[in-house]
Image (cartoon, rainbow, N blue to C red):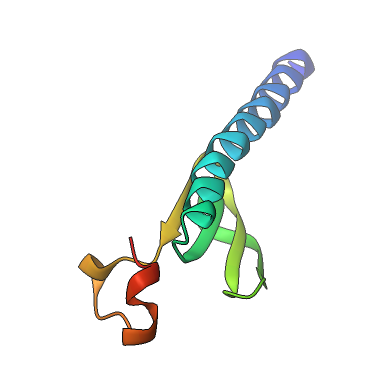
Amino acid sequence: MSGFFSTLGSFLVALSILIAVHEFGHFWVARRLGVKVLRFSIGFGKPLLSIRRGPDATEYVLAILPLGGYVKMLDEREGKVAAADVHRAF
């Protein structure tokens, strides 16, 4: 049975690395194109670790379910965007 958990753990680590690299691609392109990134998250659900860094105060999150991730960008479709940030919205 310990072999099963070892394999499952290894799979989750490998999947998390793959997801992180994939989501970093979205993050990198958004930043290169001047889009403001609000959140870079690996995993879904309740955050285990959350850090705000950088000139845009991007929130970097490691969440409890490592089965996906996302990059949240400033988006005019989700609500009002300050006039000073409109040029940085998605």
